[in-house]
Image 1 (cartoon, rainbow, N blue to C red):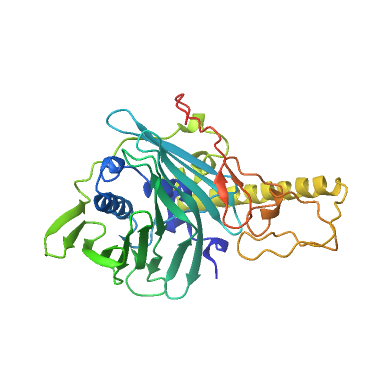
Image 2 (image 1 turned 180 degrees about the vertical axis):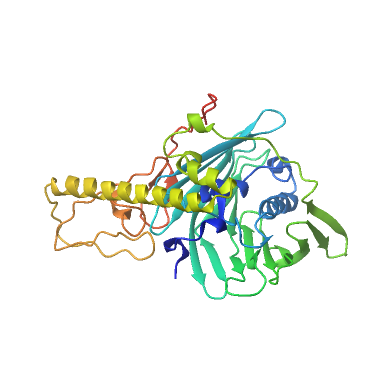
Length: 383
């Protein structure tokens, strides 16, 4: 069963959209803001690893109340930025590019810090038994240009699953489990971090150089994590109480665009914060019904536009695409009215809907790209 098809009780909702929640996992802090200045590639890798893990510190929790963010609406957008001590800014953007299945494209960009980017898309696959398991699939890449270099350095991230335990009986808690992997092919450094199931949020892992172990990683993800070298010298990678973070700017509600997260979910959020769960459930239902009507409108407009086009005849029906990004249009006979941009609709996306900030580039397989559309804020700041 896929959890995004379910309507959950209001008391389990966290008063924030998943898009905004993702900004928490991409926020700049002291562990990453100067990573591009570090000359030692090993220390750069350690810094990026620590930044990723620190930002996941808020995932583990006891209990399930107020734990599930809102499922984003199709075309929903969340944007914010953080201001560093010297005035530099890091911007975050997330857009819901598909609803069934739910796919979120995201990017964090710090132009003045080695052109730092963390971007990709997330497609959560959720299964239910005695616990809920959520696996975030999709590419995620961190990249920047180290100071003194003219070549971009990229880190490929495989995210770990998240489990909500105690759905049927027993202790209720949320934890990260299984493993995460981080790899930088350019420098030869990689890491595998194993999260120990059971609710204590402990982890162990190893950092490798060209396949050989050089550092052990250990600790509790939401408290303190350390690293130990092969000579048993240990140092702190991060202490959650000591890492400096930066102020965050979000458009005021009265100045948000109609598809921005906080405006879409405002009435649900107010009811949840007042613990009025009946009103929250009603307002959530109204949002969902409004979104169904909007998706129906997209479909009707798309079908009307296609019906008005003369058919394009090709000599041979194109081969069916495989994978999530395969064309959802079924080629009937020799008729093909679709453009390359339309062929993602159905399996990924929605007929007639065009994301504001993302588009498919080239082949349909794994190729959602940020279009470079200017990101504007109500205070006049733009990126």
